[in-house]
Length: 322
Image 1 (cartoon, rainbow, N blue to C red):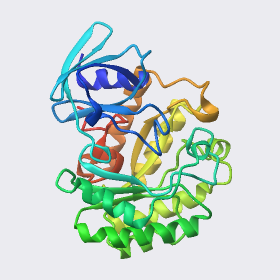
Image 2 (cartoon, one colour):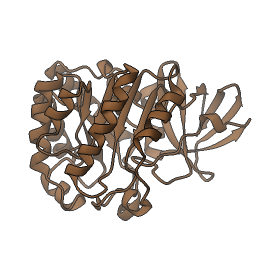
Image 3 (cartoon, rainbow, N blue to C red):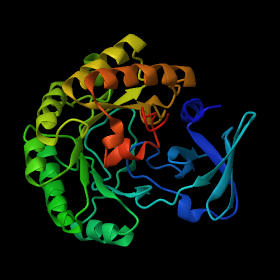
Image 4 (cartoon, helix red, strand yellow):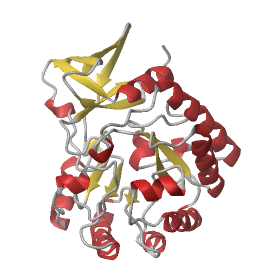
């Protein structure tokens, strides 16, 4: 089985059980995104390709740690040698930090409001980055919304000012206000990710009550002008009830704007715990649609320097997963 097909299968399962030698240094725990509040996850890599899998003792996927990061993954009749990647902060080679691990909004697929985590102080964030300097290539910042988007933005901007001292590329993904792209650009941020989340406006309204779909399109368009093509991204969750045609239209619309879509397989959680993860066949079909749209738009995900596209653990990413 080629890597692309194997990764699609693994993403459709989403988990693995871990056995063998102690592997604590390879386990990541998340305050946001897929797996927030779970038992942790691991990154299994073959060459330069990687996949992130949540830890679940009942998973049909097994990974045996053989020591020193060497590992063997077994799924069905497939046995794949590879390695576990050490995690810097949240993922390999990045200081990926959640500033505020709580949120006033209630997106149906998100567990962050239920977890109700705390906001990190600026000193704490700086110390976290200092702890991994030398093992990371970039800094990535994401955040919930503690009180208002405007207050959250102001706090994140303070964080970014302090992080500039490290001289690393910085990527930022927060819920935006109308001025967010210009403010981030003035601070020297390298990349941004503003998430449309759903393939259609009606699904977005259903899944993310209280959030502004039109605002996302506006800030994404202006961000391409400010940060340039290949450095603006948007998550689109696969499996919220959209059709393939609706997803294709969303992909092509984003690529036409100069935005790289991040096709995120649904992690059934929160109020969508009864939903199914997308099948490997569907993920592969959408991968080819996305690759074609990226080619037509002249976009290249391999140029990403931070955040999800640079990591590629949670998604199939054209060119990175060939």
